[in-house]
Length: 406
Image (cartoon, rainbow, N blue to C red; front, top):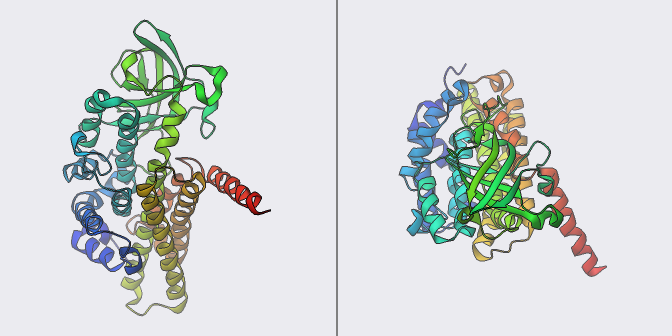
């Protein structure tokens, strides 16, 4: 019986297991620099992230030290320019780093990606002054960020949001609430989306940068969740908050555009989490079964693991292909992004389910860690656009293709 999680307890073991699981077909798609980023991420995860993961999950302790270790290694700003504290790397480099971080601790990857998701729209639409004021602190881990989109009655249907911003002297007054906000209980910088002109539908949504300590900003108690225990998720309340005109991202009514231009990054994040969780579940299962049976596994387990290995490689190839496309063309079709997000996050969940089955009673042990992969994987199918919405986008794109030759 396994009494500890060997992948958490020994960095050398973590590195050796995951090095063995690299696939030449995927590695061939990476540049030397992207392999360097992966190696850096893997080393930091082994030393400073994975050893803390089980404790954070059990105690629901926020993974601040793990995230800051990643920031210290200059991994937080991969897709940002050096002028803002980034390294100017590719979306592919970001994807492979996210996969590594998730394989070590999915909750850490969630906080990590939320920092980027907050910083990216500020860089994208906030202008130089706003970007220099807020982005560096998000990338070095000195300020926590949150993205305020989801509301009690507005999730995937962003046009249904009820948070409003009305023009006032020198800016706007913001009122409303957000829910299921990652890091919302401690956010220093919040990118908040609100309606400025309801008659215009999506074109009446605007985006604002709000500081967490401004008058009128309140936070709810973090939710108790099934998974991702090392990250916090809370409600945010805005009670007539004064927002300077300079903190409007883009122009009034450009919030939906900001969302859609940012969605490629956020869905690469979720897809990479799916692949990382699948790989973690597979690695932990392979390790536990060989500890129990030796190098020669029963045929049923060998066949099942072979199937999973192929599926994980397929998911990784899809992730890397779409991320590369995003590097080459900012106008990636929504259906392609949706296919990547839906397929890879379904992969994470389905792999964790199958690994739990293969392990039998070991699958239920916290010390093995596969049950944590299972719990953490479920939410990736829900956030950043539910997988049902992704299938809708894929279906619409398919229908347009059929119309073209019918």
